[in-house]
Amino acid sequence: MASGRDSENKGPLILVVVWVVTCLATIVVAARLYVRARIVRKIGQDDWLILISMGLSIAFVVLVTVSIGYGFGKHEDTLTPEQTRGSRLNAQIGSLFGILAISVPKLAVAAMLNRIFVPTRFHRNMVWFLSGFATIVGCVCFPVLMTICRPHKATWDKRIKNAKCRNPSSSTDYLIFTGAVSAFVDLYFAVYAVVVCWKLKVLVLQKIAVCVALGLGSIACAVAIVKCVQLPTLKQRVDTTYRSSELIIWTKLEADTVIMASCVPTLKPIFQLFQKKQTSQLVSASYFFTPDPPDRRSHKTSFSGESHRMKELMPFHASRTNAPSEDQSEDRSPPLPSESGDERSLIC
Image (tube, rainbow, N blue to C red; front, top):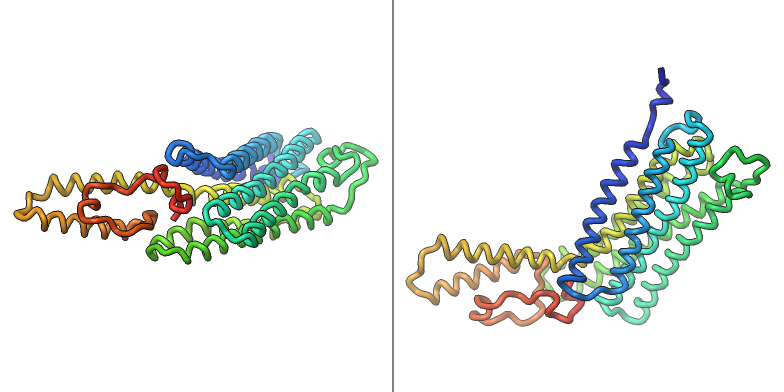
């Protein structure tokens, strides 16, 4: 009969969390690519970077799944040497993909911010510098983690004799530094986008909606901070297959949160299409249930006023031109994003 320690297994929890988050992120990324390819008909470098990031995130979750198949999530002393080797190897390589999935989206966010807001030279260079620095710091994690022991196979295979391993505190400290850099960059981008959007001449509800969409990076910042708090558990290198389970979860959450946060601001055209469909349904219903008014002009005025109030209540609709005439408000619908060359209008 298995003891309580033998039955302890965090693997199922890890699988549920990482795959649910992966499905959500995949849906959001697919929606972004649909908007950019089919509605806006303009694929940018930030879209390709997000696609690469999603690929890295999927590679991470696949390797984590393989690692759990070997026994990751269970106590190390309950695993065979072969299970320990397989679980640690796949988890470590998967974590490298996870770190890259956290870093690469920052380049996409930088490209999006520079394309939409057209910042000053200082802010443009600052945005690119921070995103590039965070990406380089993330890439350096690969040699840092793979050279903990000599030969490097001893990092995940304890059966190798006479291996020389350095103090794990140094690599753990670097991972904490990487997480701190990631959190700072996410927070900087979120604050910068919110400050710029708040200065736009749009309705308050529109400002709030856009600021929330662009400020989602602050959630990734919070997740990165939580992950940094968990990282010191790696310094002991004891029972890593069980004790580092939460780190896998937080790494996945941070990676996909960054990806989804960078996609949400680009989804405005979908909300516009939904808004247009709902408006047309309301108009059809009003003509079906409302009897013909005695005075056509009074009916037109009432409809125009109702349409104006609806536009004010739609946070994702931004009127950046003078108000249309009475006939235009009745006969013409707002242009689709693909009909406008203003990149900022795709978000604001």
